[in-house]
Image 1 (cartoon, rainbow, N blue to C red):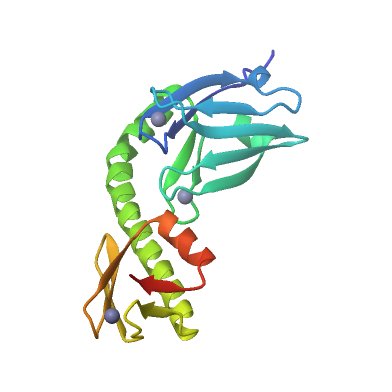
Image 2 (spheres, helix red, strand yellow):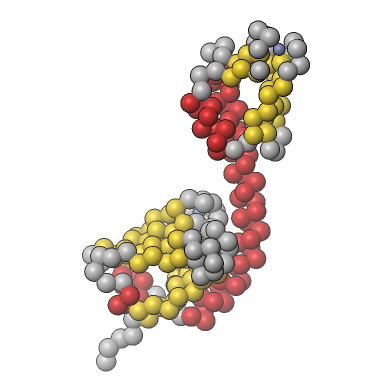
Length: 198
Ligand SMILES: [Zn+2]
Ligand SMILES: [Zn+2]
Ligand SMILES: [Zn+2]
């Protein structure tokens, strides 16, 4: 008797948090071609990529929790023979890919969905804070070279931080420069050798 190599694969889209469950069989993963799993909903985000490698699958997951891509190597035998298994985000420990029969996968995913949403909000806050620290660190580096100064000539600059921006203020003339807490600001600062309040 031929064993039925069927599995349901479930995950949550990192773009829009939609749940996707696909029913697949062995023949959907053939040769060395990468099978790309996109968002089930409209956003079309590429969520999971599975590439057959000898006796393993390499599974790349765009994590809905921490926005990183995580790479897993799972033995083919484990993939097809386990009743149910979960791949976890190494940052948060949360299950991000569910493999098993359709009903189990569906059940586990819906159980986790609320937690996903709650935790990903917390993740956003952490990300913003990390960004702010990186920007402040870079400003400090530039300041050490005496290259943070005001158009009035003063080097007495204070730094204030809130959730959205970093504010530089000249202690002598009161001039203000806001630096938004964004990836773009960080990149600009990494390329800049001086910050002038003008
Ligand atoms: Zn989506
Ligand atoms: Zn993750
Ligand atoms: Zn000034």
